[in-house]
Amino acid sequence: MTQTPPAAGDPTARLQELEKALSEERAARARAEAANRAKSELLATVSHEVRTPMGAIISMAELLLGTSLNDRQRHYAETLQQSGRGLLTLLNEILDYSKLEAGRFELELVSFDFTELMDSVGEGLKARSDEKELASSIDIAEGFPAKLLGDPVRIRQILNNLIDNALKFTERGSVRVRAGYGHDGDEIVLRFEVCDTGLGLTAQQIARLFEPYEQGDSSVAVKYGGTGLGLSIARQLAQLMGGDLGCESVPDQGSMFWFTIRAREAGKAAPGHMAAPGAANAALGPLSGHVLIVEDNDINQMLIAAYLEQFGLSHETAVNGKEAVNMMQRRRFDVVLMDIMMPVMDGLEATKQIRALGAPAAKVPIVALTANAMRGDRETYLAAGMDGYVSKPVSAADLFTALAEHLGIEPQGVVASV
Image (cartoon, rainbow, N blue to C red; front, side, top):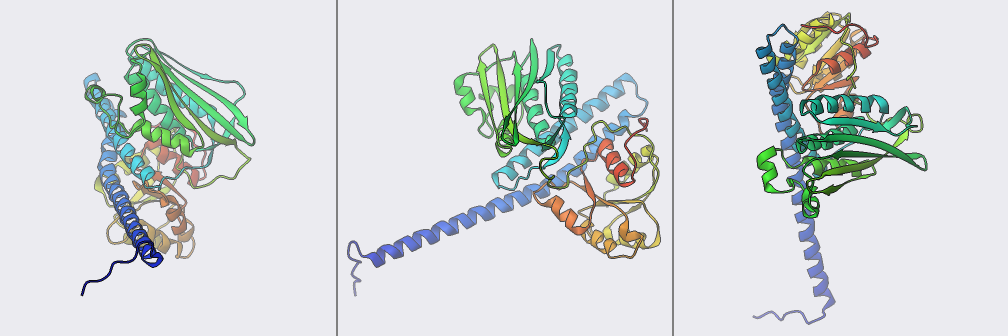
């Protein structure tokens, strides 16, 4: 029997068609979200696996540079360290872009000293511009508040990205940075400009510049390298901080990249999440105390032990969380450095079990050592009972600052060497 089709304008049939279309759209959206989650989780796993050996390469080069080397050996070690940092930058860009794309990116809200931030950026600019025999300067408008609330790590990331590009594409002349500000109610609007006398860009190139994987034209990628993600990430970060990022340029005369962000004066809003220790200016002087290293990777054990010996700290090592819990019951430690991903028992479970022990073990500060970088990781560490974290690759300065804080010591003293 042939079924008669619904009459034109039949509301029931139309409703069924709409419900079917909505169901298909919801299913497609669910598949896309699942794919994004899977991609983000894969990249987080890859990031952890790659950052661990990359951290060892960078840290080993750092330790090597602290020894007596002849000029050729020092050049080799510096090249090794610079190459490792370059690879880590590419990895971080890919991971950042994935987090931004998946809506899983989180900004910090911490108090920071604006002058110290700009001094640090200026030191890096001068060192690299001197290598290319370029003039450079940092010009800061008068009257900046001494302390701001915001995300200094991401501000530095945007500035360094723009400075890196300016230096890369400028063969003669100068690279100059300007910082100004204005007020919008309780908020401070910061504006940064990075000006160079380099290649310059056409209007067509600028139009493509902030798209992912674009670099102005194909010859740029061949000659200068890079992923083409840096500017896209920088613009998205500026927008997340309530501002924007753009470019003005004249071919063969140079470019001016600018970005704005919003911040507040420290004391006018409460800090947000636990932040990684800022240790750019920490002096790596002597400390005292007994530290438990909980780390399953042999190379990382060796690196962290070398740093602790630099700092004047004694230490013991556990290769997994279960062993750490047992050692905490038998011995007295002043700080625990806890890896997160380990066999037998991971760092989160070990932390929970240590916190369930009686005093004094339950009160010992626990600092996470982590290559994880996804949104919510730090909240997870806090909820498990940890007191702070140091990101991998572990730098001597960050580790020293974290240890000094939890040992109740101001980061002062003479710089140690291996």
